[in-house]
Amino acid sequence: MTAARLFVLLLALCGIAPAWAVPQVAQVILVQNSGWMEPFYSDPTSQFKPLVAALAGNVAQPGDALVLAAFNQSLPGAPSPRALLSEQVTKDTPAHVQAALAGLETARKPGGTALADTDLGEAVETTVTNVLGGKAGLVWLVTNNRNSPNNDQATSERNREFYALIHKGAAITKALAFPLRMPVQGQHYHANGLMVYVFAVGPEGARALDALLAAGRVQRVITEPPARLKPLDRDTVRLVPRKVEDAPGVEFSMDAAGRLRADVAPDARTPSATIQWQLQNTMYPYTIAGATISARSMLGGENRPIALKTNTVTRLAPGRAEPLASQVALPVAQLPGKWSMAALKSAGSAYVLPGRIELHLQGQRLELSQAFRERMAALFPGDPLPDIFTPPADIQASTAELPVEVHVHYGSGPLVALLAGGLALLAAGAGAAYAYGRPRKVQLVVEDELRTVHTRAGATQPIYDKAGNEVARLKTTLFGHQLLDLREGAQVRLGR
Image (cartoon, rainbow, N blue to C red; front, side, top):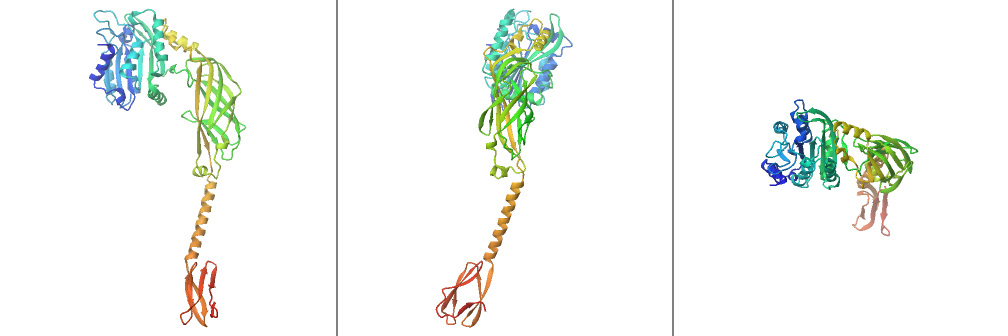
């Protein structure tokens, strides 16, 4: 039976449903226990197992599917990865994780005393392909960064294979690495540090990872900033507004979610604004050695280029920012007038017009920062695995997207005026209806006889003489009374 099939069988025996059968994203934590990991298990001061337990306890939330597995290199009779725990997360899961880790030791090859070798690529590929089945999930890999299948000394080549799996594999949508300092001394080896990788599988996995980071759940355990492995062609820079010029009634700010917000007065009709930005490199640990930049705005259905004062970026280190001035067209033609229905509905609050700004880097050249190289060399001396951070040659462009919300603030004056006018019309209508419908008394004289007739506005009624003959018709309006069809010779008049 292959290692992959045995792993899936172990998951089934442990009673876990397939990852795609649960609503939450699946979490798979792979823990290396090959020979190179010996000091992490034998050093009595090692914080290795507490780290793994804390990581599992923070990234896996109630309802998630959690798989904890050990890995080295699969051999006949010694499958890898090997499941240690498979369950849906509950309040008891942290204790279960600690118990599963307590019995984990350095693995040996079947039928002998030789320590097991390591195959990082096999562990990740088996998990993505067989355990998750290509469905969404997060795969965490805790390793000492020694990739040496069959004790292969050509570690650079093995690392390139691992590198290709990450960068070329379509299933992995996002990959981060956390280099950690953890000096340990074993009977055979000494180590300075660990690497924790996380691979997001599928778009849902990437969103789950972003949510984990935004909530600070990873940072509770790992305080080091994550080094980005993938993607390197999106969200490489960030625009932060500093100042708006030549645009009265327009202000820009950044909200907590990273969206750009433009607050616009309803009478602001400036067609464009000069905006001073900070262009920040968000691709730790890469320096943007050079790129040509261009930008466009999509606001209010208008797709327009943004005029940049500088069209190149050079030697922009990770986390650093440089000033960038731009001329941005404002969607004044798309803003509702203060008497429009949209404005009246938004009275006292704001009318929101969504949009975005896109920044494109062409001819992008990335270099691993020298500070990161030095850190990796200190943590993993003599290990060439940092080559995995070398950007692929075919990634020479990237796009950064900045969501924008235009908030137009309409006062309540027009709405109050409209309501007042409506109330006045209603009052006038009510008065007219009362005047139209109220009973009226009309006095008239018929053949020297004074009569009182009861009528209403809009009514026309016949008038009879003493003999019972119709001699006229009385018409009543809002403005008075009138005799119609007066018979010749009849003695009928209004009033006394």
